[in-house]
Each structure stands twice: as structure tokens, then as C-alpha cells.
Length: 411
Image (cartoon, rainbow, N blue to C red):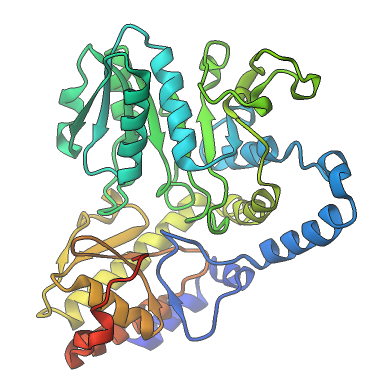
């Protein structure tokens, strides 16, 4: 492959290299887990401190008006919309991804009242399945979930399908579904689509309106670097705004929240997809990360991410050919998202040993090590050094040590 000096040369010529300084990255750590939790943007820490000490500490409740707290969910939604191919009034940043999925699927089902089938990818991130199973069960109207896998989706779109609830980039393998093609196939059968963009937003270019998507949801704490548990986003195409309804109709989705009416009247547009009082400090932290992603050319970012992933896989193939790894992601970089999955029968202790050595990825049962390649702060030398450390761990058998065998609560 290449030498470390050649990797350093790539960093020198990288137009995205200055963005690394926007993050508070710890010394001695190579962070390959931005696909699970992005690192801290310096501006986020400063913004939260300012909001806590001044807006909350001094402004108190007045800051809902004077500091723009009340408008924050729609302000952030409008900003993020440009990155994801939506109009400013089609997106809001609010609640958690699971809650937004619940609301979006419920809204889509209500728009197709004569149908009872929800189509999903069975190997989806489990919470998506759990949320939709819970929704279907509570509605108690004879809904069924049809679970299929990637190559079976198009053929499974039959006239009884109300909604396709699909993840654009698979959480484990990183394979990408054809959003535009599957949405067109759904519409041809009279169904609607709800897309999960958790592993897409900030990682690969997305154009929701070009794909004619109906609804979409996603988190802000991965490639958007919004912070742990930062609020998610929800997209609803403008053509559905007048008719859409969702069951978690809290006061922030009311037409006039501070009229304190007894009975619910839905707000106009995307605001009706909100629920209750918003987590302001988390929203303001997320705003800093969203701003960084939105200021970056998504195609340029995607090209660097693909190059980092290709370098990683090439070095692993060269340095670790006899250590039991198999690729759990598509071989074609154009067919996978921003992370790579390697499968290994001892994947968990290998990952724990890597983390102790300062290379942070994560593990997904039963055998998958995930490595994320965020282009905003990672360098080519980081990838070279990470594989060097991985090679040493495998050659020395360090992962066999007892402390790496104990499974922790979060993997």
C-alpha cells in the first residue's frame, strides 16, 4: 500500500484538513467511532457554557423569547434541510430518533388507511423494529410487518403495503439502499416511504426531495457531532403537511401552544410533528455540529471518507491477511456508507484491546468490529497508525488477555 510518509503527504494536501481543529480531540486517541458518537466540536462546548451561564443563568425563563430558544427546533431543521435535500419548512430537529420514527410511521399509515402492511428490512437496527412493532400492536387494527432483506425489498412491495420503513445505510454492514429507486417502486404501488438517515446524514450525500421521499428521520449525534443523546430530526414532504397527523400530539404541535386550549388543534406544517418542551441545551450543542457539517461540501466529504475507508481495508489486507478477518461490508466503496464492518470470531476482545491501545471503534454482536471514517477530523496518518496498532495486537495475541474477555454494558 503506502508508507506513513505518503499518508502524511495526503494529509498535507487535504482541503478538509483545517476542520480537524474545530474538534476537541484527546491526545493519543485515534477515533474511528464517529459512526456511533461524534467527537466534541469546540464551538459546542462554548455554546452550551454560554447558554447555561448567561441565557439560563441570567436570562432565566425570558430566554425562551430573547435567546431564540422557542424557535430552535425549526431553526436547526431549516439549517439541516439544506444538507439533506429538503426545503427549510420540511424539517424539524426534535425528540429522539425512535420517537420520530413512531410519529412518522403513524402519520404515513394514517395517510393510507385502507392498507395494513409495513415493509421493513429484518436486519435493521433493532430499535426500529421494536418501535414499529410497538406501534402496530398498540394500534390493534390488524397491521402486520413484513420483514425482508436488501435484495428482496422491491419484490415485496405489493398492493397491500402501506409504508416502507427502511434504513438508508445499514447500521452494521454499511450497505446503502437505493432511496430513489425504492421510493419510486413504493409510489408505483400506492405506498409511502419513511427513511432512517442515522448513518447517512453527514456521511453521504442525501437528496430527499429529488428521491421524492415522503418522511425521514435520523439522529444528530453520529456524523453530525451533536453530542450524546442529542435531538434527532424529522422530515415530512410539504405535499403531506395539510393532511398528516401523528399520535403524540403535545402542546408544541398545537396551533397556538400558549393559548392553552383544552382541545388539540394541529399546527400548520412541520411543527405538527413536534410533541413537548424541547431540550434546549442539547439543541444548542447540536447546532454547532450541524453547522460544521452544513459548511462542508458533502461530495468532497464523501470522497475523503471513501478514500480513508479504502486505505484502511487495503492496509488490513496487506498487514493482517492471516488473522481471520472477513469483510462484512460491500467491497465497492460506492455501495457502503461511512463505516466499514470487519467480522472476526473474537471480534469483541480484539476491539477491547484496540480501545485500550487508543484506537476507538465499536463492536456489534455477534462478531462485527465497526470502524467509522468521518472526513471532518480524521487524517490519513490516523488510518495508517490504527492498522499498525491492530497488527501488533494480533501478532502478539494481546487480545487473549483476561481483561479483554469481560463484556461491558455498552459495546
